[in-house]
Amino acid sequence: MPELPEVETVCRGLSENILELNVSSVEVYAEKLRDFIPADLNKKILNHTITKIERKAKYILIYLTPNVNFQSQVLIIHLGMSGRLTIQDEVYERKKHDHVILKLNSVLLVFNDARRFGIFTLTDLENLSQHKLFRKLGLEPLSKEFTVAKLKALFKNRNKNIKNTLMDASLIVGIGNIYASEALFRSAIHPERMASSLTDKDIKKLHEQIIITLEDAIRAGGSTLKDFSKANGESGYFQYQFKVYGREGLPCFTCKTLIQRIVQGGRSSFFCSKCQK
Ligand SMILES: [Zn+2]
Image 1 (tube, rainbow, N blue to C red):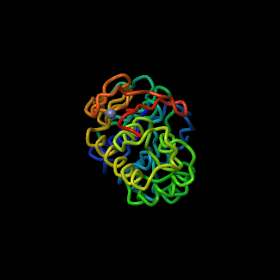
Image 2: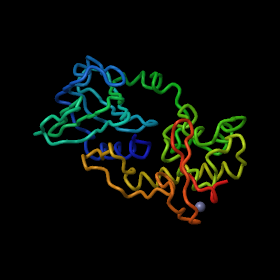
Image 3: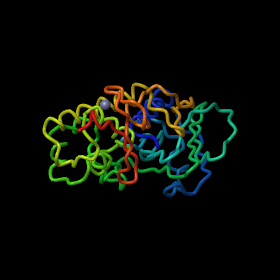
């Protein structure tokens, strides 16, 4: 499943390639993914120009400004489990699971999603901040609102393990299974600790390491996941070396103790029992 660094990488790739382009055709091949694709998508965004692309939590927002007297629109895209956004040449043969194809000047923006857990929807710009998808989102870890004090407030009295606490999108957005394990290792915090048991020193360290872990992964172009590919269609590649994730039974890079795997909230957690307390 694409996590925050992958989504950020896709947004950056799109910004480099499709800003200022104009939507000259809209082809929709599916009525519904996780939710309905708006039936009037074509009518609403045709002849609009892409003016901004940004990430909000794990959503990709593509801002579209009309050339004539229409309202500004924002495409809201979520990659779900297996969604991919790629940029293709104008001459392109539609592939299986390509659900939406936007023609932008002389390139195509293609949304493919084999498992159909993705979202491809639209809102008026003025309703964006009130949109149901964004009302209950937690702190954005790569923004100014993500402070040690706010993290401390979230953890106070929270009697739930720190791993699942980090992954709760109503508290903090965009930290999935991989980066929760990685950030906890880098902070020397055991994934089974109660969030409320973290000391001020632990929280300060964790705050710092969440940011560093995500930024490292973004710098490496998002990690390699089988269903993930960069926005320009290059297939995923392995550059980001996980320290614990997926390394069960392999020696810890720091102390050589074998990395363990446990299941928390139905998801695997990887950790070093010596380095993480
Ligand atoms: Zn270790």
